[in-house]
Image (cartoon, rainbow, N blue to C red; front, side, top):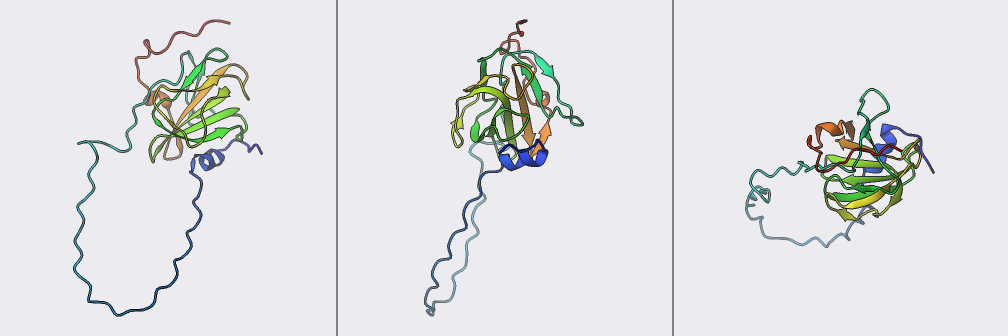
Length: 188
C-alpha cells in the first residue's frame, strides 16, 4: 500500500524492523551462594583507529548529471534532483546497508534507503531498476540502481541525506569538486 509522503512515513521506513521480544528463561531453583566477589570495572572501549568517529561518513556523488533542484528545508525539496538519462548508473554515495527498497512512498517511485551509521541515511528515488536488496551491504560507488522516472515528471535521481531522521542539504556533505565524477547533462 502506498503511503502519502510525509517525514513520518519516511522516518518509519528508515527504522530497522523491530526484533521480537525474547521469551523469559525458566526460573531457576533458589540455591544459597557464596558472598559476591568485587566487580572489576571494565576498560572503556576504544575505536578501531585513533581519532575514528563512528558517525563520520565519506560521501561521494551518487550519479553523473546536472543538479536540477536544490535542497529547500521549507519546501517539498528535501534533497537534490540530479538529471540524467534512462538506465544511467545510480551509485551508493557511501558504504552502508540497504534498509529499504520498494515503491511504498507516494512521490518517490522506486526507492532505495541506505543506512550508513546510527545517524546517517541516504535516499535514492525515481529509479527505473533497483539492483540491491534489503539487508545487503554496499560500498561507496557501487551501482545500486538505474536512473528512471518512476513517479516523476522526467528522468532524474532524487537524492537525500538524512541526519538523525531529518533532511539535510546534500550539497553540504558531497565533495565540491565533481569535475572528475560528473559529466554535464546532455540535452535531449
